[in-house]
Amino acid sequence: MARCTAPVNGHRTASGAANCPACSGGYRGYRSYSSPFPSRTYSGSGYVSGGRSSGGGSSSGRSKPSWSPAGSAVTYTTAEVRALTPVRRSVEIRTTPPDPRDVFLCHAWEDRGGAAKELHDLLESRDVSVWFSEKDVLLGSTLLREIDKGLAKSRVGVVLVTPALLERLRGEGIADKELSVLLATDLLVPVVHDTTYEALRDVSPMLASRSGLSTAEGAMADVAAKLAELISL
Image 1 (cartoon, rainbow, N blue to C red):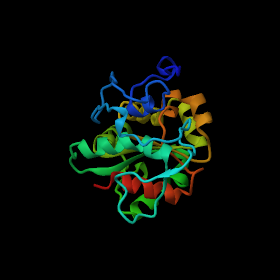
Image 2 (cartoon, helix red, strand yellow; image 1 turned 45 degrees about the vertical axis):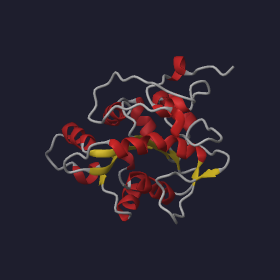
Image 3 (cartoon, rainbow, N blue to C red; image 1 turned 60 degrees about the vertical axis):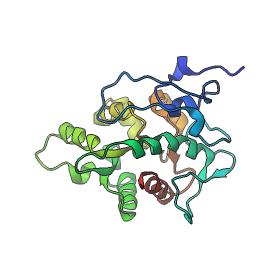
Image 4 (cartoon, one colour; image 1 turned 180 degrees about the horizontal axis):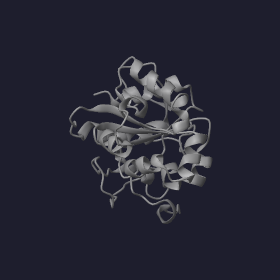
């Protein structure tokens, strides 16, 4: 009989339960965090059946999520569809905040001119509005307060997981504070780039328990395309 992984990983979210071999058929969760995002739980009935992965890695077969527009050339693994389904549902039911942004981009400071800027530019080229510290934190403003406001008005939180972010998380800096808020929601999408879910699990088991996207499955442009479809209503 399959054993529940809750004693190790916890089941604070639908995506965490979906990756548990014992609990993937149905889930009733709990929340113990205060967050600007809505707290939601879902049954497992909305997930696409198919192979599983330990994170955002490959899974047998390809699937088309219900939110992907007809005629879209973007393709998804079954694991990606399963991981993104609870995020999509939260996007659909969340009340639109004032002065909304589509995506809050959490990243390491070292990536601001590299991978984070690349993802930001690719998203904005697809008409996705992005809260990005490089342009949204004005000189003289309080960084943590601006981050707090950015989190509150963003529809989805994207965490760009790179070797630099892993180092930042070990030091429990500002990125760690952003992540603490996002982990309390079903609006978090990890994007693993130039590292692995195994390396992430050594630093943040809770974040690693969230399946997401990975540039190992395709280029950063493919990740941006999937995120753009995810938030499109």
